[in-house]
Structures are given as structure tokens and as C-alpha cells.
Length: 348
Image (cartoon, rainbow, N blue to C red):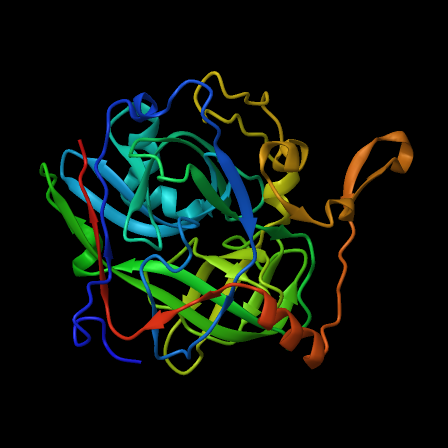
């Protein structure tokens, strides 16, 4: 494949931040939400096109008096709901600043048509005993022309050792910090690495990774923490927590299942009069609110010693080569392009 600039094509996305994007909606206009499974074509020496995941992959940016700081990635899992790595929120004391109003957190979601959705985080929920966080956000850019929003389809399945996963994310160039201006231009490197599961830690791996996690045989550039990780069937199975470069080339992926049940979140979007559920776990919000989960029945009620609790029962689904090839023919593929791409946003 050729470099986008060599082919005379621009691979970038842009948007305009709006004070009240709901003014674009007409009375009774319908919004649509669809979960997607994603497989990928290309090799580990390629970079994804900037809008390959069509609004599902997020670049996270903290904005304070000192600039626009882009650190880490996230993934849309429901209407205005996203997952990210919890440790990213603590970079440079941003978590404290976000709580006291000294900073704002925005998420940029490039679309496949060159547009981009801009989300502003209103609430953050840290998932106990994990490196996961749930973001509740509102849209602060123009609506898609077709009013259609894409989210990742999650799974409770535990990938088998040897299964190849796809680790994605955005990394920013130049340290990720640019001055705040009427027009802000961010240069991003969409990443996509393929790697086999080499070990599983259902009870966590020390204080840095207290929740269930996987070791994957690949290295991902710094700054991509929180990037979504997809299994062999295209389901979202985890988020990138850390990666070792050099000879080791091992990445550690936090499984998403604690985010489904261990924390409650309160959706703040879509706007009225669109219905929103009350606070609850992602499992409780479920498909009725556009949160798609494969095999939610992996969580079962149990009552040891008379105490009712929710138990996760890990399950596997052996994939034969024929089944994988059959899935690959039916699922959408995210294209690759060589070299960096540019992500452009226009903040207020």
C-alpha cells in the first residue's frame, strides 16, 4: 500500500466544536446506534487509516491553562459511554485537576468519511481493582449526517492462549502537547498491532494490574494506553494497560469484564427528549441502551454462606481455522495505510 500523501490523498479528520449541537436536531428526529465487530487487514509495520474504526476509537486530550495534552486512547461502548485505562487519568495530576475544575477532558473520534465527533467528559467512574475507567460524555460537535453512531461490541469470553488479538490505539507526536488556540491541529499515529496471547492472569498481576489481564506477544508505542483490543471474532475483549518495547515486546491487556459489573455509571447523553436510564452498571444498561455484550450470562448470581453476589464464570470458545476464515469474509475490515496521519480539531 502506498503512503496517503504519495497517492495525493489526505488522511485526516476535522470537526467544529459547538456550544449547543442539539440545535441541529429537528423535533422527533431519530438517532441510531449500532455495535460493530472488527477484523483488520495489514501487518504490524502498517498504521491504520485515521477513521478506520468509524468513531469507535477515541484519542483522549486533557485541556488546562498550559495547553492541549493528548495522552492515551479509549473506546465507545454505548451512547455517550466509553472505556479507558484508569492510569491515564492520573497523568500529570490531571485527575485532581478534572475534579476541581482545573482541566477538561475531551475525546476525539475520527469518522471514516473524514469527519470527527468531539465528546466532552462529564463524569468519570473508576472501576475497583482494575486499570479501567468508564467515561460518561456529551457530544460537543456536529451530529453525523445520517445520525448514526457506532460502538464496540464487547465480549465476556476469555481468549485462549495462542489466540491472536488486535491491539489498537492513538499515539500523539511531539509529546502530545500543543498550545490552545481557536484552531488546534493534532498529529496522531493510529496504531494496530497483532499478537498472540502468551499468558493469562485471571486474578491480576500485581498492584499495577490488579484486575484480570492477558499477556500478548507484541509491543505498542507509548501513549496508546487504553486502546481497544479485539479478539479473533472482532469483539472488544480488553484495553491496553502497558507495553514493553525492546527484546521483550510484551503488552498487557486488562480484560473488560470488571467494567461491566463492578462500577455504576450515569449516562448524560443523548439530550432530552431522548430517554436515558438511571445510574447502573454497563451490564444492567445492556442492549436496551445500546450497550452490546456477547454472553452477559457469564455473570451469575450465587449465594455462598447466604450472601448474594455476582460471579463471573470464565468461558472459552475454540476457534477453528475454517470458522475464522468464514468470519473474516463477513465482518467489516479496518484498512491500513503506511506512515503517520493527522487529526484536526477546532475547540471552542
